[in-house]
Length: 330
Image 1 (cartoon, one colour):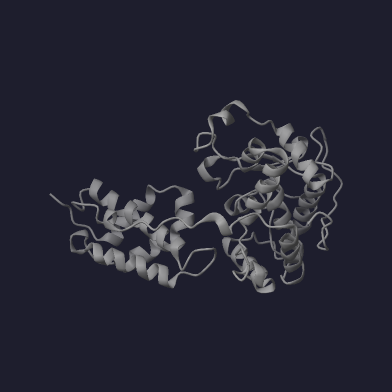
Image 2: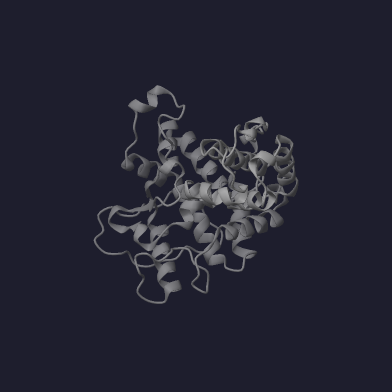
């Protein structure tokens, strides 16, 4: 016998079983589903209703990345609908999973998400330094993203305690995709800048759990901050806004550094830098050629052409900020 509970009420139950990353990345689509089906029962909904919701989602999507007219938003909505209806079947609120009747949009081709060239990196650097309200913050986030290959969620989750001075690394963990965080070696100049920046924004002794990236009011940046700064970069540089070969998003920093490492140090080094799962469709040889942190550190030192943070330091290095002027490497 099918139970009766409205879809929006059941979505509240489904949300309790979703992971933090899923909730964070799909909150907009979950909220849309609740409003769209408010007061309705599963037995009263048809697959055409679901298809209409998916089409409307794609149509109204804000273009935050290369999405081919909302395909990214469309895929996210289909994912959430399938989770909701699967739970409904399991909980005996529905007899069939109607969401399986929705065609899953194909993934967007990654060809326009290649690594940035030196000239394109300089355009990004210039845009952040001259066309944002807080250049010091923007440049520091940009340099950290490049050096560590951190995803947006990982950058948002960085705390002061994650600056591992004695190890010459920064710890990535919060929001890590597939939970594959880890320590990433960074340059001495970046470590000094992170320490100085956090101390300056706090205005005194920094608590271990303080967020690293804060605005001038001492408030941690949000996902919206990344979207806003990316929009400013694209507005400054049309060649990075779809008029050229790429559409700039912060995730391109991962593509950029991975490309540089793969070209200069090999596939294994690039995979270690990205913290990709060895079992995720990579050649079996990779399981025999694990990369050490020291090897990754050496590869990064050659790319940046400057000293890496010391591994044996017992005290925090002397503060020295990264300038917002043009980078000699970028």
